[in-house]
Image 1 (cartoon, rainbow, N blue to C red):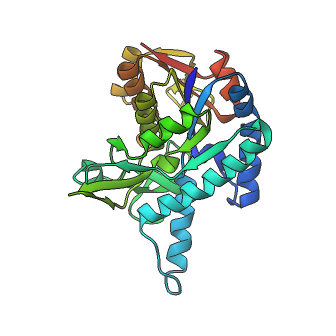
Image 2 (image 1 turned 90 degrees about the vertical axis):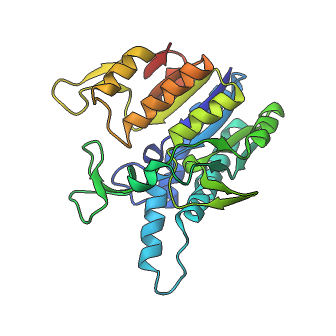
Length: 297
């Protein structure tokens, strides 16, 4: 089976952690044990990952040190966190899978006139107990976070390289943090300040490589109706039609669960495979039909 596995940035760095390399490596090591078993079962695997907490922390570091060190634009910060998290995932997965793993710095084409640039909605960085400044939103009831533009991904520049690596039997880590957002200016690619939602980028890659399954691993165990309320109810299965109905009814938070649902719908409708949303620790069980929320036609 050909699988795209999207690892959430918040799942890799748990709430309350400082974000040290040791903390992130420990979190990733636990996940890689189950990923290794998935690989050893003969599946072809492409791994993507979020970078919301990591790129947010990097932006804070740059702001604090801006008087002494030149700050990098957000697209460069996206590239930096691709390397950071790709290295940690690759090194831990190589230890337990005994397979060749390749991290590919990935550029994703967006429209520079995308409405997202006028309406930032993607939460990044740490959670705060109160709103500290303009440009912060309450993220799914978990705390206040800074928001940045999140344009729709249109094209994967390195898609042929991804296909070639997978064909050669190499596990690929790609589109970290949703990829580096670029736009086409004549014959050139130009970086633009934004963070692409990694689930949307993952769905795009899944369609391009003809994946059978898209797995979105996050910090909660499944999709919920009335999430965070006394009436909340976990959903084991959702048809595309049912998912759309819940989404249209405002059930899923912007910048959090909503893009995950949208990405699953996009993949299932346009590829014919199925998608799963599950907790980071439930990936293997979810693929075997024992955890998470399955979204299918």
